[in-house]
Figure 1 (cartoon, rainbow, N blue to C red):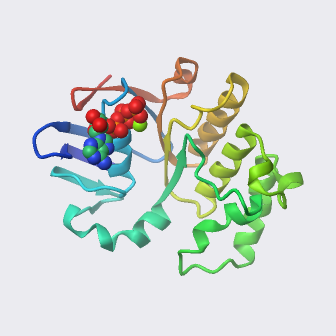
Figure 2 (cartoon, protein in one colour):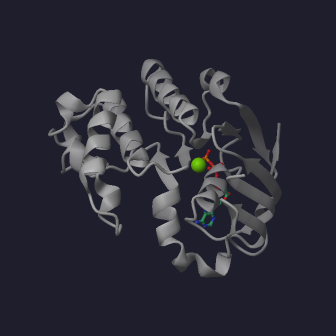
Figure 3 (tube, rainbow, N blue to C red):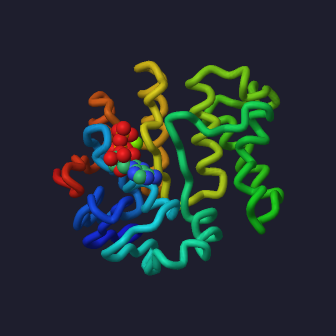
Length: 219
Ligand SMILES: Nc1ncnc2c1ncn2[C@@H]1O[C@H](COP(=O)(O)OP(=O)(O)OP(=O)(O)O)[C@@H](O)[C@H]1O
Ligand SMILES: [Mg+2]
């Protein structure tokens, strides 16, 4: 099992539990959709899954390894090899090229940009129709193009887990469909994708859909 969340508790202020006894499992090849009203804790959940924030109770196993919330500073390497992130606001560096953005994950890594990485870069540029744009500055791209760059960056290290927080929130219907179809294809290649979305048109792509309400997931 790739993800095992068991009875997770999360509070920011020590009083109100944003996640309260939340459990979730997910394995390779699955596309899991999380819905829920604004403020229900969807981003909080993704931040925990992505080792970006700590939790206050329960257990989290990622690829069978138990995550200790007191030792998050030890997880940089785990985060950089196991997890790819995609956000609504793209979080790209506008002033550098498409290609340099996609290779950013190697900046904070011991893994060199070797021939295999460059060959995979070519493959990804083709797959996301970015080859003609590869030397363009990201500030010159459309929203749909930016999100394709963000997906390419999320997968350049072939992480088994992709976390996507409203990745289509700034896109029109056509580009939203394209983005989720790319995410679906990643699961067919063996990745697990956890996707937060408000868009009902994307629900058809999920293997499982959950609703986050009062700190827990319901089907
Ligand atoms: N860093 C933080 N410090 C304190 N409270 C926080 C923090 N982040 C989130 N919260 C609170 O936790 C709750 C859940 O927030 P979260 O961002 O996870 O919701 P969400 O479901 O992603 O909402 P949205 O759909 O608007 O993105 C909210 O009440 C929010 O105010
Ligand atoms: Mg959110």
